[in-house]
Length: 113
Image 1 (cartoon, rainbow, N blue to C red):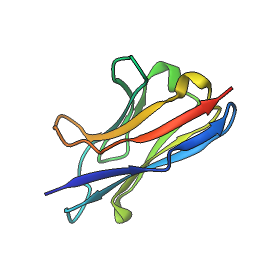
Image 2: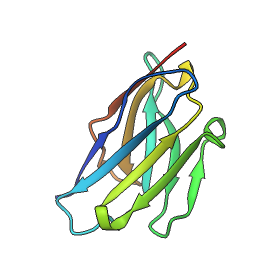
Image 3: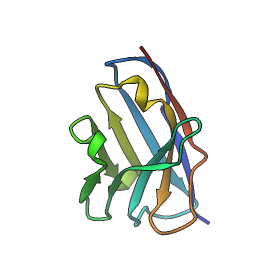
């Protein structure tokens, strides 16, 4: 059964960068559309970005130009490169197989001012 695991979170100063990874296991491939979400304290979980099997990408408006989603199918991994981080980006970041209940456990991103 496929499982997702996020990594790469941490503490970074405003203006800094992080690259999150979403690695799939329990599957021979990662033939899925994958989305990244985030949830800040006391806020609803929000969609961040998505990538199709074919590599088509979409972003939430507030992330355009700062975040880049990509995938390496050979490594069964989807990435979220985050640049120009601001304190409002502080949240737990999750990846999910689109339209399923398959979520990772999340990785914490904290941006200090």
